Structures are given as structure tokens and as C-alpha cells.
Image (cartoon, rainbow, N blue to C red; front, side, top):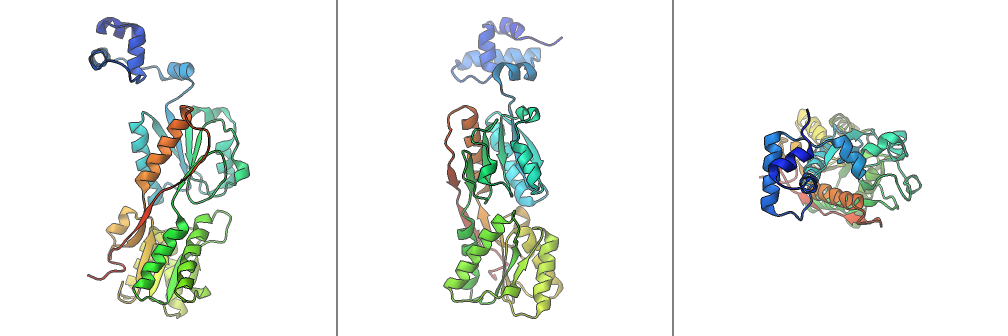
Length: 335
């Protein structure tokens, strides 16, 4: 039979309420009392009844993290950071992906019974607008990503325009004058692509450099395959190019492969910059220069904000901008 709170209380010599406070993480308990109760819990093998606790508190201890694609290294690394910070706060994270599908994103906001299994939602949307976010959602929400949505939810992000401008400025500072960009997207879900293109164009314009249309390469997805294909298209066009800015690292790694197959030297002939600072880029050959968003800060702030909202400590949505930095590696800097 399951061990009860009363049995733990009898063994530890305290009240049932004190045992309940220890189990629920109540802070104001004497260390020696907490230690005695925990020893009794361990000895008896007591396990809290999650269903009963949920009915009593109205909380499940679960957070949902939903991103466009879990097979994208950036989102996988971000998810790991979110899980770490949520665990430290006493929560378990359930992961899901939308593939950038608008109906799936809208479904996450719908007032449905199955949504009540989560205490809060961290969402990186690609298609939602301000009109889609309920003024008073059923569960607290924190938004991630580049899509600016005026709402009651907090939005944690980096300045994509400035980051892309910094990446392009780096190529220009190296003396590169024929710079291509890979990853443009003229679709409703392509907000980050538009922001990164804007930053690149600002840098080129400030330097008095042209932006040739055939050096602005669109991609359907941000994958190695697409980066490889786009780089091949640039090289096949015959248009001279000495620098490439890819809108994420996975495409940049695909581009590096295409250059290597054609015996084009990086960075001597063509310098390459990516975006996201995924671990794979650090170990690519050559290692990849990239924009590093502070993923740990994004995760930490998102969890902190969501937990605060769950506790009813915050109601007004805020725009929280997280820093980024340019990380210079071998793809732009010869040893």
C-alpha cells in the first residue's frame, strides 16, 4: 500500500502539515526539521500523489516548450537550457514542435481541456500575430523568437537586425566586397529571415556596396541541404563572390561542404559567417565564425518570467532583449 503523509509525520515526529510543507517546497522550515522529514520520506519510500496535488493546488508542475523544429540544433540546444532552468525551479518540461504550421500554433492557444495539463507555455511562433494572442490566456505564456507580437505575454529575443548587421560588417571589415546572403524568405513565417536580410542590407548600404539580386539566395528551410544547394547556385552563376553570410549555422555548414567539394579555400577565397553558434559549427572544418545569441539567458529569463506569471507575480507583458556577440573562428580568420 502507498505510504501516506500521516505515516511520514509519525516517523519524523512532526505534524502532517509540516510534512506537506516539506513535500511542497515551502521555504520557511527549520533545516533540522526538513532533514528529519526527508529522512523519513526516504526510509518509507513516500511518493507524492501528483493527481491529488494537482486537484488541490490547481497546478501540475509541467511546463510546455514548443518550437518550430526540434531537429534544428539551435532549438535542441535551447531546449536543453530551458529544461535545466525549469528543473532548478521545480518544474518538468514537455517538448513539442509546430513545423511553423499556423493551425498548430493557434491550437496551442485554444481553451481546451488538454491544455490545462500545463501550468505555462513557452512558445516560439512563426505565424502568430498580436490578434491571435488572448488578452487573458488560459495559462501563462512567454514568447520567444524574432516575431514581434504586441500582447500581454512576455517576449524574449535578440536584436536580429543588429546581429545580422554585425555579421555583415565583419565581412566588410575583412575587405570582402562581393557578399552573398543565404536564407532569404518571402513568406509569412519568414520574420527572422526578413530581419536578418534588413541588417545585412544596412551594412552593405553603409559601406557603399551593392546588393546584387542574384547573390540573395532564398531557401525553403534552414538546413544543411539548402545551404549546400544555395552555395552551389551562387558558384554556378559565375557572379564573383568573396564573402557569404548564412542566416543560420546549419546552412553555413552545408555551404562549407559545397566550397570544399569545389576546392575553394575558406577563408582565403571566400569567407563564411553563420548565425546561432551551434556546437557543430565550433567543430566544423574550418570552424565557423558566427553570431552567438545568449541561449542560456534566453532560457533562464523565459523560465523565470513564466514561473513568475504562474505565481501571479506579473501581469504586464514586456519585451526583453538578450545580448549577442560575434564569435570569430577559422571561416573568416586565417591562422
